[in-house]
Length: 470
Ligand code: FAD
Ligand code: NAD
Image (cartoon, rainbow, N blue to C red):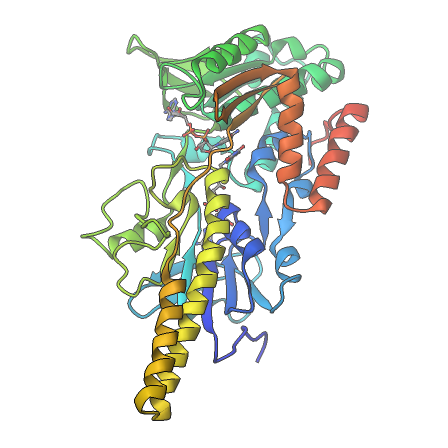
């Protein structure tokens, strides 16, 4: 009854967990004629994370940076099942995945287990809170689409509450103080976007309030953006200074309360700073599902940063060699970026092609043995198949090719560290911003999304951002 999963008994079942950068890049390149393919993800879409901060202030509309996963799968040579559900357990011994529909609406069946022959594990990571009190209750994250929408609503709510007649000046200052935690690229880009919103729209919509708006960026390390070159860190810091965005380095957030944030500066003294909103962009941690999977291999999987994989992205410790992992859920020598996850996805599509060929040859050898042939003929055919198998078993290891680091810093300025054979080019400014826009536009997976994003940019330029609170 109901929707059937693709089932060709001649083919192996490939289950892909996730619909983010790694999984989508794999799906784009995967030859689906090789497998019965099943995709399981709590989101039935791909989210283009690099433009999420632009959604948080209304530069882009949310739908423009989403791509339904079925948009990719419906063009595939063979039908692919897309299931909107969260995997709750991976059982490598029995080769099964259990998953449940944890969305608002559920049918009579909302929990089941399926078998896999190969599993691609690409569930990403979640936001790290370090168990700091109040983070989950009072801060906005910046990871999922809902986070950006929530932040936009909260920010507009702070503005409207500040505009309430009779509000005292200190209360207006509190409501309009935005604290961004984390001086990584997410925190920097978000601060830049909020500043743009202030300068380009709020100054004219809320002229009496705009001078009270204050952005403070808090970073525990001695500098922001440690992955960028020193020149670009200095450039970002001076651009933020001009934009009146305060950067507090060597400062830790110790607690977040309903109306304030507790900071500990380099002098070790704690102080409570009133604010209307805290945005938490303090990095990644593993999902529970990943921690549970790691715990099943206590002797091999010992890295607390993520799943250990070999050069071909096979999860270490799995004797059947049939779990592949990629992206933010893995612990490799690469940073947890979209660039790495998408290159791993494309690479894995090639690996899975080879694996399918190997399986086909192995099946042929088995069939040959079952045929009962004897003598020279059997030897010749077996030798030929063994040769073919040897050829397709030689898989090149994954090699990451760094295309450079890019970040938007507000005021129509971006920074870029671009590797060239002759050395590194570190550049920042308006020209880099145009490069940033064109790079992200061309990286969007579909023409539909490119068109939506480009028209949003144009709409924002002409009409400004929407200040209504939905
Ligand atoms: P994700 O893309 O996070 O995908 C994980 C998928 O798994 C999602 O579809 C999720 O719904 C699904 N999932 C979650 N739980 C389960 C479950 N239980 N079962 C099944 N599926 C599950 N990187 C860059 O290189 N450049 C940038 O400019 C950049 N900008 C960024 C901006 C922001 C705001 C953020 C948050 C990140 C940014 N990154 C950027 C980092 C980049 O987004 C990640 O490195 C990338 O998403 C990792 O890809 P992934 O496939 O491992 O995980
Ligand atoms: P991140 O890990 O790069 O930065 C988080 C920062 O928060 C760290 O510098 C950390 O010191 C700080 N921090 C943590 N706890 C703190 C506390 N209690 N008080 C003060 N500061 C605290 O996180 P991110 O910016 O979300 O980036 C995650 C990944 O995504 C990175 O690999 C990044 O390169 C990638 N990314 C890339 C881009 C881009 O290339 N433009 C944009 C966004 C994200």
